[in-house]
Length: 176
Image 1 (spheres, rainbow, N blue to C red):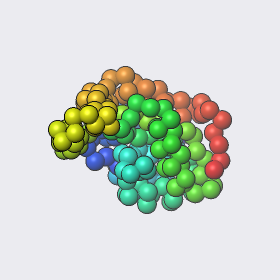
Image 2 (image 1 turned 180 degrees about the horizontal axis):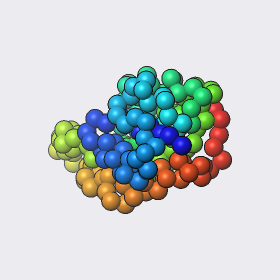
Image 3 (image 1 turned 180 degrees about the vertical axis):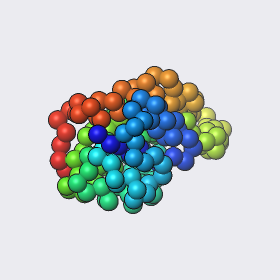
Image 4 (image 1 turned 90 degrees about the vertical axis):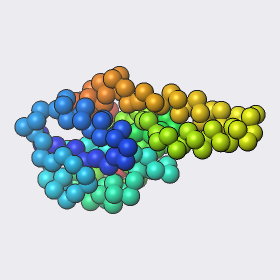
């Protein structure tokens, strides 16, 4: 079975996950590995990786996913404001909606990712202006937790996820 790993990564988090997936899969089956491009569509299975932007994937991936008609697609992504499975599932559902109705969705996987220092500075400034700002405190705590992600456990989980999808061990792969 052939596969492509298509990745949209702004800060390197999603690229690190894509690299772990590539290392876990048989190299002889890889048709394409890189940014969203039509060449990726020559594979049987497409692993589509994205960074989170305003509750969905970035524009380059949003433009690619509708081209995946008739393909088996597994999604993976990173989100700075992560750690909550419900939030991750909501993100995956939002991105899944971009797939055409004849694509076969194999499932999705998400993990938390590091964020740029400018994000921490914004919340620190809010806290400086209002030391009782509970939301700013939560956001700073989340930022600090995210600094180590994706970590080795995240990368191992991504590799496990991808191996299962390529081997056909889907959790009732569903047509959209």
